[in-house]
Image (cartoon, rainbow, N blue to C red; front, side):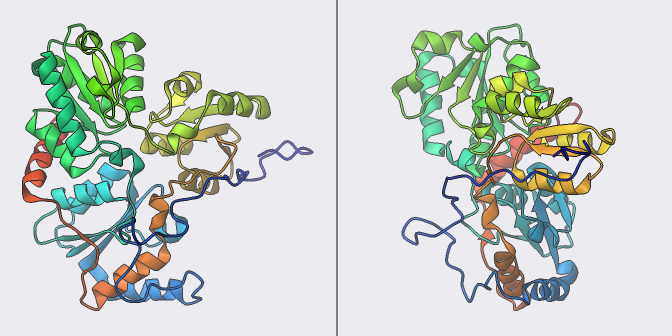
Length: 402
């Protein structure tokens, strides 16, 4: 923010609280998994909580490896051995075969990927099983299989390659592996889509990609990086017959986008961009590619969480930035770069509420349980799903430039 009298940076302007109820507040034991913990969950007001975390971490030593996603709370990041995006963290876990326990401070699909990529001797633990992902949950395996059957009935399945975003369940990744597709991240989506199109005649041909589960990443990549038009993209709604489309629309489409989105990045709007430009002279607007297409088109720069972090590191002192991604990361960047103006693109608070399920009490509980010899909240992917998901992940790793 700017000091009105001096015109110099004074710190991070905290956005106003949202009126929305965060998923992490309150509980419903009849409908939510993971909200009850075996044993006593420490109170967040426990004055000894940080010391308990340090003691448990020291007791585990090299037997444990703690991963912290960029969107985690600072109190959790403080105890992470490595921070990063979902795929970086899964690869880091696989590179630590000596660690008996991998504590994944992220969400469920990330812990699944870590279980797939680590050895059978390693055990992946998610401190709270209720830490899910709304986007990943928008593509359920039964729905995806039904959609593929629709493509077969229309006669286009043989000319369609599935590409699934890393933010998906192990079952969806396995579906992709079974159908000769690949996984992608927000960093390599362009490479993955180009590879997929080359398998069915190239970007300029007539082949198709079924992109799961984030419609915005798929659309933004296809239009802004591959040169396809918005009219080449259709959105498949699994709740409607034929996905809410006609057979001709499916035949004409190049990108069949699943109707899914990120509940955080989907909040940003063109109005947010216009407001921050009016408020902060010379601001550079940088948005994550999970944002809506019109927001991406209005932004100055677009990139993954790792891209955003590196861009801030390389930015000139005194430069002004408005960042459209999860608030915990933006706060952390503002704190790390006091010589720059860092603004949150939205005017109201919007944490990733499921990511925020992982808090210090849950991390302490998980570490203390492991130190006492009790493995809690272990994530184990079905062997067949793990095999085919690994096929899709290995295909991603084999893409050029990865």
